Image (tube, rainbow, N blue to C red; front, top):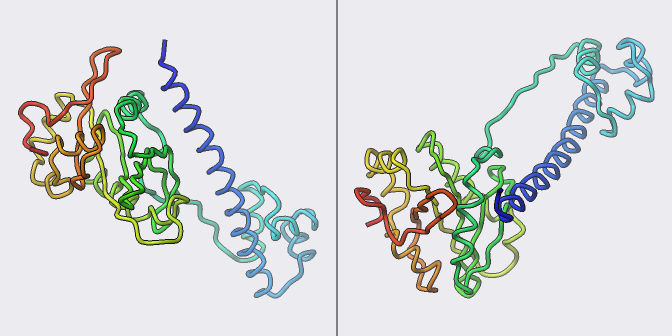
Length: 260
């Protein structure tokens, strides 16, 4: 049986993904309609003539230009040929994947349960500029105007990519709903890792890289989160998983030089 926190987290991620999908579809429809309208005007030709050449209904083409229709790829290619244009569809990398591993929700739940009252947690925080993505959690310490951007991983496939994503999301936090008018916020980063043989070996092999990205002591970061002590800065903290038991470790695992 999965814990309630895991189910709730998955449902939250699904709802966030659905909202983001709908928003992006609307934006893409408007962009496509604007492009078609500009090309048609430059031709120059009318909607009726474009529809006739493309073999489409005139009202349908009008709705496409207005950003109100969902044209198929076949329809878009027909319009592109009629306009003498090229059509390209690409995937562009954003700030981190939306698909997460099965341990992530439980790891975040472990941190949230120990979180001191001075911290206000915000889960699944979308950001849009300069990079688009969703932050796993942001821990707010309003009295200090501090936002800690937290990402949880049970496995790290590419360390340099994770560090880049983390930096991009932190740089984009001002585009979130958390940042409003008033004095500037201090933004810091937190990497939550599962203590596995692979992750510990990664931390040993790339100790200098991790120290540069997350220089604060792990113990100081944990103490700040659970005991309200001052936040030490960008840090890595570790979670130990043993079956259904999860433990927030008070410092780096044995043999890991980072965060000491």
